[in-house]
Length: 131
View: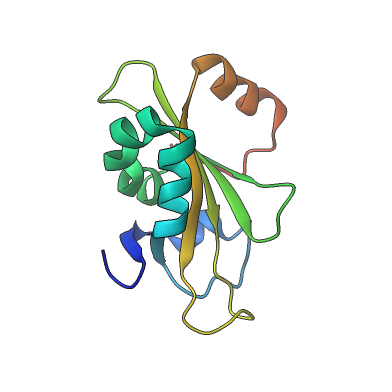
């Protein structure tokens, strides 16, 4: 862990351009603060699914806009290695008009049921779908 965060991976700007055309960096981090938040609220999810974070941000199954926050994406990732495992991840994008040096940051992540996963697909506007 370096400087209060862990480097997770890199996003493909093209997959997230419908959230923002002004993405400042491709780097994705998980801060110690957010890591502690997930550990405290969803300890089992953190332990079982932290190893899939890189896969989720670099190869999302679906991307949606977070309607409540600017420059924020909701990522759904179906984990093929685990039966009935779906990750719901909120990613705050760093944009060019923010403070220099900020990175794209994972706000939270958790495992969701197939039912909740499918509700997202039915009720939210899909901005990116893995082919």
